[in-house]
Image (cartoon, rainbow, N blue to C red; front, side):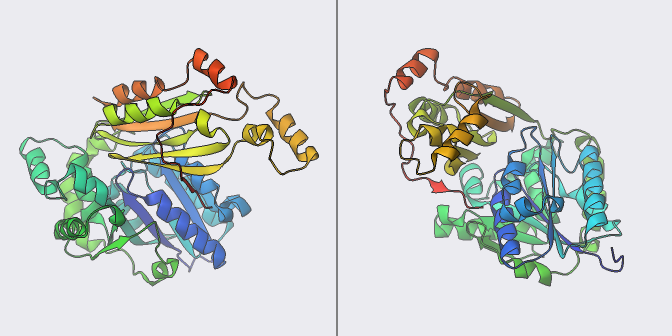
Length: 400
């Protein structure tokens, strides 16, 4: 490796569900199309590593696994996460000299430890600390962002810290502010949100990005991160963060994992989400299936009060069972051999991570578990009974 070249690093930071993985996948897709040399690191605080799977399925990573590293079951800004990041970077840079390194943090990662790490990092230079801010979440939970500062001030008066502090400080440390999901709020709301959020960090400009559509060329035009601008902020926050960063689940956050081979009952799942999805269930994400759509592997993607479903592919068991599969008998036989040691539903499975406040996460998780088909319902499904399905009929297919 030529030590005189310091590859630029862009960090995609932002609260849970703000659209970091969507942006990351789009950037990697552009890198593949333009034959750019990139390295990719993703951080997921859950043991399931859903984001790691989604980034790992992109074409550029499938072609060259050496450019990709997943750090999961911890927060990147914790000591454990910083140590893992250091090892990942050293491994990647020992094998290649990328034109760009992109890092996606967990939504609960604080930018301060990352800023300090890269300030003293001799092999790469930090050029972008992007704060992705969820317009829908700010509209729903913070009255178009108007409640952000009052709630922060209340926390300060009571000498406490929670996710409001994290959200504001992610904005304060950013070099680039990106409003996501702008198409899902009214124009007047977006204008107000942008005005309030930019007032928190007037030194940066705010831009709205739809569906992760940001030109990768713009990342090569960035100057090195200005550490001087945040020096005083670092000193002010260091004492408060000293205890927070020691844990892998800061800000009263808790994670729960759901694993089951059974499908969700579509109507029951719909009703549970209407009833139990509270403000403090920040994020849930994972793969699942429905008896009414048993061919498709679905991606569950919930942030704040909104839920989206996407098709990530087809289950092998669904292809084998489809009389109109359109593939050869040899391919079907191969699929059957791959399914031989699987469970009663083949490769179909449900694996979800739920992240929320410790006071609410168990209630929502248990409610989700109650949505799995019972043995009697499974028998009815196998006999051909249909189940009411209120979820949108047209679901977007996730593009790699």
